[in-house]
Amino acid sequence: MQIFWDTIVTRQDLIIERTMEHLYISFLAILIATCISLPLGIYISRKKKVAEFYIGITAVLQTIPSLALFGFLVPILGIGIKTALVALIIYALLPILRNTYTGLTGVDEGIMEAGEGMGMTKSQILWKIQLPLALPFLMAGIRTATVLTVGVATLATFVGAGGLGDVIWRGLQSWNNSLVLAGAIPVAFMALFFDYILKMIEKKVTPKGIKS
Image (cartoon, rainbow, N blue to C red; front, side):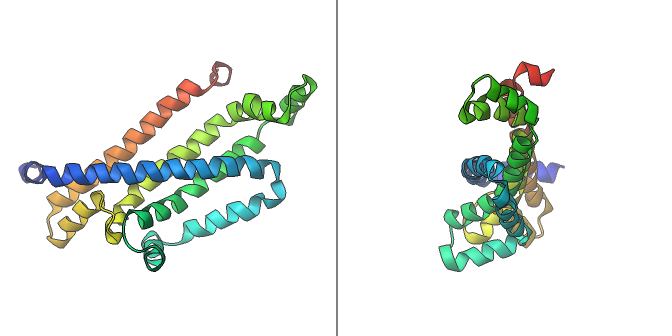
């Protein structure tokens, strides 16, 4: 344990710098993936004939081994943050898209018909009925994608994008388990922290009627 703490103290500048890089890459990837998946999920919930096509594409991309995906993108995008971001966005799409579609299509038809009977437009039904009722599914998808992205982001080091994977890789190369832990533990805490924050946001924005 003492060796581990000594490693933290002597490498604190490196660990802090790589943690900031990891946070930036992960947060940006999740933000972009959410901005893509939510509108697309809303669209395919209304065009169910094409739903399996779009979900199938993201599912196929999800099956590509993460390190291989990074390798495929390097000849196209080169090395750096751009390549890491594209790979992480691809991995984050499926959980958010599938949960958005499942949540929206799972809303009781009778509730939506009642909204139509009250004179609501399709847009009003979406924002006032479907999205609030589907919110737990949406947030579950985002939380799953976040934990996945934070973990996969460790591979960003192999394309020159930095992150805590750099600390882990240095530890592996030098057979320094303390340095490996110094990179791995912050990743785990970061994933748990993001998940907790999103859980709190979910509680705040979920209507009281749905909570009960």
